[in-house]
Length: 73
Image (tube, rainbow, N blue to C red; front, side):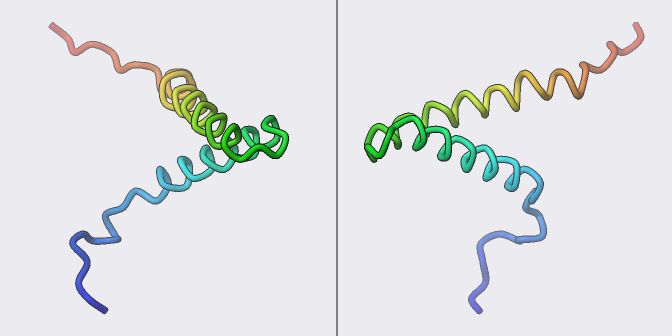
């Protein structure tokens, strides 16, 4: 096997799994709403992925991980 330009051991597999799950969920929702139209399904999938990604990173992360306290002065 040829040498890869990166080490697979350094990949954050949890993040990969979360983003894959978000993309899968967005694809299901987008295609269900598009009623068989592939182009509209692709557009809706992209829109729903953006919505789910922003919700995960900015909203749910803020709930689960409150900001750290300010360092003492």
